[in-house]
Amino acid sequence: MAVPISGLKSWSVRLWNGGARRVAEQREFYWPPKAGEINPLFAAGDWKDQPPPPDWSTEVDAQALASVMQAELSRQLQQRETVAQATRPADARGFVTRITRFDPADHPVTEVLAHLRTASTAEVQRVIALEADGSKRSGILKRRDQLTAQKGPTSDSTRD
Image (tube, rainbow, N blue to C red; front, side, top):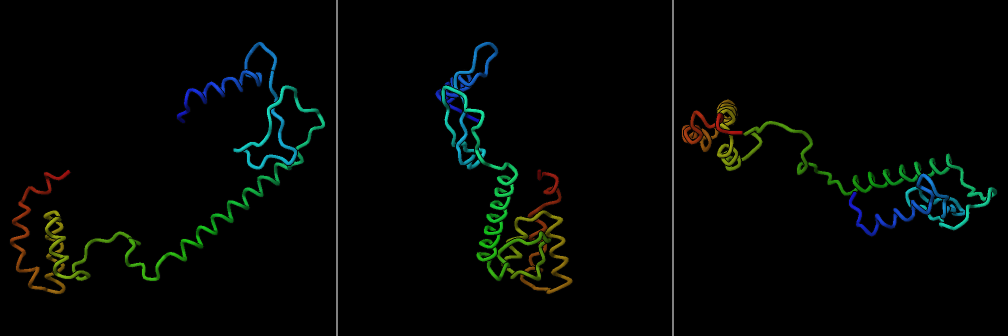
């Protein structure tokens, strides 16, 4: 956590005055708010020169505070999921739901050719074999030699 020098000096003074040292007496004391802490991360109490009296009570049940915080977190998560479901389109084809291998039968010729131009030699051979067994589209099959010749026999070994 990056803290500016002025913040570190402020913390040092607060700790020194609060008694965080070996020898001297404590100079400042934390007085929790009467209504109890709103959130443990954001304390709303005061620092005073004398300690709070023994009968000083914050009237907060720590167990109740924890359950309230848990209930609030649960409510926020449920609200977030409700918003996510409302914004999710009915047709989820634009979202990747699972990873699959490229199937030429699911794509037009132009997309298959674009995929083959950037694919490895093994992928080109696999896709062309699927096309030969399936749709047998001449726009793809007539370019078989051209696509495999572009890759060369060592193209897979040069990739990282």
